[in-house]
Image 1 (cartoon, rainbow, N blue to C red):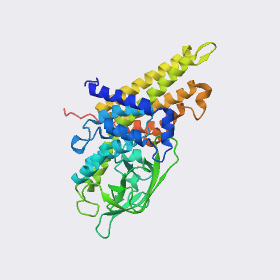
Image 2: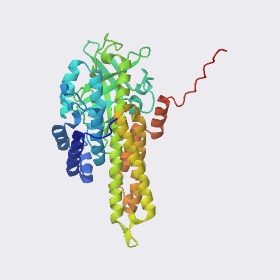
Image 3: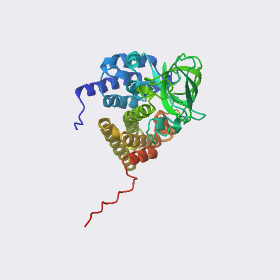
Image 4: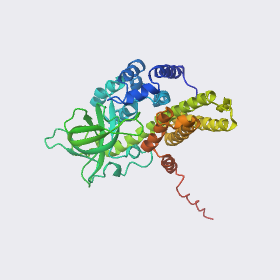
Length: 410
């Protein structure tokens, strides 16, 4: 394993940091999240056209840059530093891999190029607060209960009686960037209770019967929406083998869908871990800068031994999380543990940042609270940390009973 970054990766990170440093300061972030889109559309187009940010991990044949998910993770470390509000996570990390894995040739050709160019944004809609479960981050996603289980609730799909596609009915309460996305990938159950399975469907923003409402959330840099589907026409992602939702090819196979969601979740863990590390590192850097300038009893408070010890502990924790995130970029199977460590590092660092900023840090309007809100909201969406670790330990077989040694006949 060569842990050194390539010249191209260093240049990408330098350029991205330079652009975000000029266009995405705390004041600009606060202004962008209060717009109708929830992000700076002009900055998003600049990042898309100049750097190809949403297409980093999309193959060149579909208009992308053709890099690896590891490169996307490195880029997201920089977006995490600035707490960039953008459709990047929902579009490039969650939806593009699913379209690549499950879509037909025509669907990939029609959707991936505009996604890579930034002209089309997408959002993944799963029923209820079940995003972590659907992506198999904190538990197994094969049970299907997270999507309604074929009973009432969740989102239900049925074949159109006229033979013209599918119809969706139901609700999804927490959809990242769902209020502004041009395309929705909706996880829905079909086949009735006896043959219930989870499939993914494409829903356009102008589909009749689609109602989208932006929600008030703790972290405004991660806007969420409530999606209501009232007999909405939809297109199955992939091929349906027999037309009744029980097909054996492409996206029509429920097992393929759940496997693709889990694979997307592993990549998302790596990206989210890198993003959290970037945010934690920046929160620590801003705190170090503050304690160097803030004076008490005639000397900077950063010169006090107690403050030095607290900052040293934070530095070690952030660097350990960064190492775990980089390792997960090389081996996505370790993404769950890396995400747990990164989210914990961000939570602890953001909390200490508020403490070390003193009285001014406790004011709700202070910039330190942007990082604190990101830490709390990410753990609610993708954690909590103890469940991420428990699931990783379960997958590694740490909780299984040791097998008895073989008995050798004498």
